[in-house]
Image 1 (cartoon, rainbow, N blue to C red):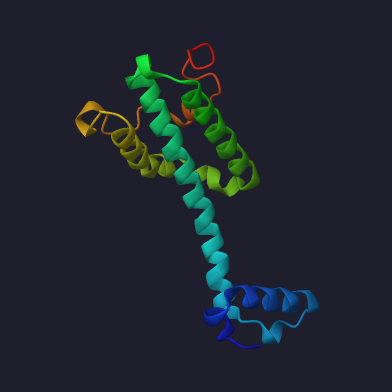
Image 2: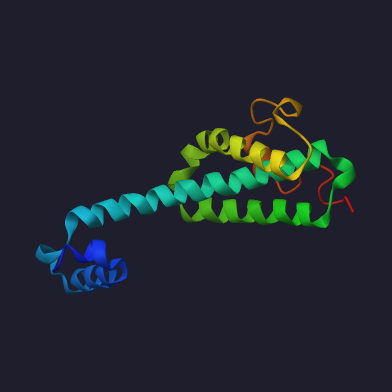
Length: 149
């Protein structure tokens, strides 16, 4: 096993580690780097949850604060993000206890999205997320989402 392969050719390193695992050759595994990569995978799932929540929150804020500019694209984006968040939580149930913290982290990204795509600024928006976890996942929230043109 070449441990420098991790730094020089990551893809080859993953193939090698996979092969060693399949063969049960545990003494040749690159344990320190395997541990690092497994921890990184868990962090990626948290970041994906935060990212999708940020987009969802941003579009809900746009929906709420710019009712005259609503589009089908906004509605579909909200629906897609909800579906992807639900899928992520279903595939990773241990993320559920982290959901409230993820909302708080994602809110800033949602506000940034609104500031980028609208004339609204920080002072036009709430300081904290105005949506509950239940509302964020509710396909019928806001009540006019599925009836708006």
